Length: 194
Image 1 (cartoon, one colour):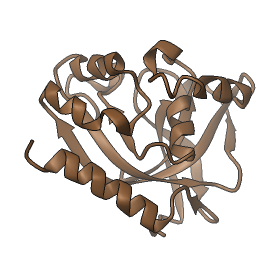
Image 2 (cartoon, one colour):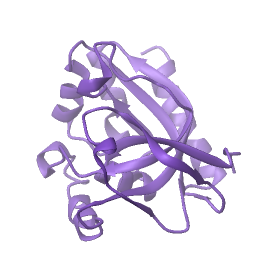
Image 3 (cartoon, helix red, strand yellow):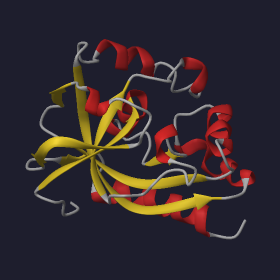
Image 4 (cartoon, one colour):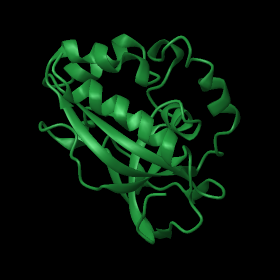
C-alpha cells in the first residue's frame, strides 16, 4: 500500500459519479480542465494527496458513457442530505499527463466514465488541452460527511477543509497488483509514441 500523509486538509472537487467509479475500481484517472475560478491557465495541480469532495453539479446521463449512466442512480440513492458535503475517497497522485492534441482523447476512451462529447468539451474549455491524473484511490472506513458552507461553493477545483482529517485506516480500492496493471496501461497509452 502507498504511504500516505497522516492527516490532510486538501480536497479536490469531483463529480460524485466519478468518485463512485473510482471507489468501484472502474477507473484510475481524473480528467481536469479547471473550474471558472481556476483562471486562464486551467487546472492547477496543487497537491499530490487529497480528499475527493463529491459534487452533484454538472452531471447527467448524457454526459456519461452508456455503460456508466446507471451509476447516476446509485449515486442519487446514497447522496448525503442537503447541507452536507461528502468526502467518499482519498487519493494519491501517482502520475500526471497533459494532452495537447485532441487525437489523444481516443487513447483514454475506455479508461473513464465520460461520454466522448464530455471529454471533448473539457478538452476545448478555454484553450485546448486536458490534464489526466493517474490516482490511487483509498476508502475511509466510512464516507466523511461535513457541514456544507459557502467556503465550499464556487467553480474552483481545490478547497481547504476546515481542519486536517486523519488518513488512518484507509484501504486501497485496488490491490497493489491491480493498480500496477492499471498504471502500466495508462502510462503506456499516454507516453508511447502513437
